[in-house]
Length: 177
Image (cartoon, rainbow, N blue to C red; front, side, top):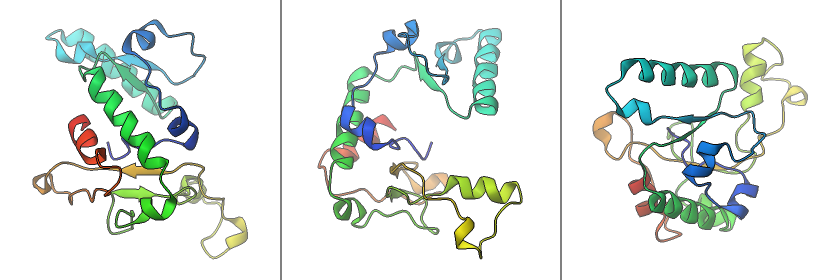
């Protein structure tokens, strides 16, 4: 939920949301990332809910990613979030870093290209490599992201520090969230 705005530079350049109907039809996409219809989660049918839950669990356990459709978020809300995301990631890096950087103490904000090393965590998990041996450290990940959190501190998390540019970013993502 923190990584709603995360994407890579190629997506920022394209920034074309896929319609729900195209997702529902599969759109001929050879991607191994499943598109899951979550409409059953809004129904009273417990069997359908459990099937959807199993699909989600399977995707999380075996692939690590999934997309959803029939979630009820209006297409214009999605389009506004994509538009503002593309505008944010097109900004110069110093503008994106201005007062919105993610830190070890603050979990939300901008993380620059190469600013995260998920492979380092996997190495640690497998017992390989050492923090003292810089030659063995993997390079930073080839993505940049902007992470947001809950709208209020009542949920036990700090408020999101929003960037000043582009002007519609905060409103678009608050509505989407």
